[in-house]
Structures are given as C-alpha cells and as structure tokens.
Amino acid sequence: GQGVAGLVAAVADNNRGIPGVGLNRVKVLPLKVFYWVEGSYSSTSDVLASALRYAADQGAAVANLSLGSPTPLDGVVQQALDYALFKGALPVAASGNDGRDGLRYPAAYPGVLAVGSAKLDGTRSDFSNYSTQPTDLVLAAAGNRNPLEILWSLALGRNYPYYQTLGEYDYRWVGTSFAAPQASALAALYVAKHYARYGRGPSPDQIRLCLTQTAANGGNYDPQTGYGLLRADRAMTDTTYCFP
Image (cartoon, rainbow, N blue to C red; front, side, top):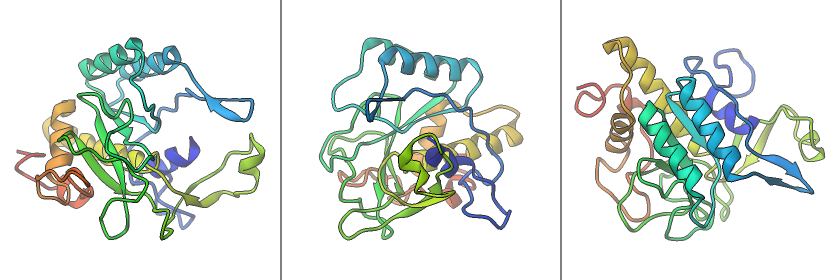
C-alpha cells in the first residue's frame, strides 16, 4: 500500500528518494481493504465496496484499485463502482499480471480506466494483461520480468518481516499494481488543473477521454497496448480532449 501511495504522492523536490507522479499537487486518502491473514493478503467484497463508497462520499476524484480478481466480483462491488462514477470519482484499476488476453476485475468493468504495464521502450510488459476487445486501457512503465526491468517506490512499512528488509525505498517492484497509481496520479493532476481553469472538475468520462486520447498511440486502439503509454505532457496541455 505504501509503495502504491508513494508512486502517487511521494514528496517531490526534497532531495530524497523518489518523487510521486502527483508532484506535490495531489493528496492520498488511504483506505485499508487488505489484511494480512495467515501469510497472505485477504479482503472481502463488502470491505472493498465500503471503501469505494466512502472515498466517493469524501469527494475523491480518483479511486485507485491496485488489485484484481480473475472472476467477476460480487454485485455489491459493481454497485459501488457505479456509485463512485455517479458521485464523480473515476475508478482506476490494474489490468492484471497473468500476461494474457482479458483484464482482471474490476479493470474489466465499464467505466473503469484499466492500466497495464509497459516496458521502458513503451511496449507491453511480458506479465501485463491486455485486451483484444477495445476498452479503456492505457499503460504506465512498471517493470518487466524477462529481461528484468524494475522501478523504485516507497517501502516504509515495518509491520511485517518482509518489509523490514527493504529500507525506506525499494527497487524491486514489478506489476500492474504499480502502473495503476501512476495513471491515478496523472488523472488527479489533470483534475486539479481543470478545476483551476474552469472552476469545476471534469467528469469521470472526461478524465478517461483525456488520458486515453493523449496516450502514445495517438487515439488508436492496439490489442496489445490499448491506447498506449500515458503521456502526461500531452494530457496537461491538450486543447482537443482535455481542455477544449
């Protein structure tokens, strides 16, 4: 959780470690949905749905979901996603780390921005799930397995023995769970600039449109990479889809 939050909001320009993509302009509302149970993380649909509804009620513009299930989630989660969208919060979810055609849930649901992982050259990471059926899918650089590519993030936790070996920063993160918060942070940056310019935030549909149409594939959908690698420089300046 802290690794994901660090990619969003680690303090920038302080001569320490890494900067979050949010560049000191976004905030994180941390909501715990996973618990350490007998050697692994566990959660329930009710807990996840409650977190989504709470975030939406608190006025969150984006709900980052660095999690996924190979099978459809319970109806209570689907209803919570719809509620978040209705309240103006965009769900952003990891595409999955199975390296296959077909997104994990909730990334596969309509209205959710799915985020896969790209290698440093912009092509799909070998583990990243993709979709041959057009959907709202973008990529962010989040490592590769073979050949190995890795990224840095915060790893401040001291709760579990695993984290005690990592120090304040870790360079071994690989996965779409670390691509999603990069998209979430860019979405939040866009919301902040839109609000400053127009006095109101963009709708979830507008955020998805901005990020997908300014991504590296130039608005075209590719079965392997979706709309392509996110381009923050374009999303923050585009006058066709983002700031018309």
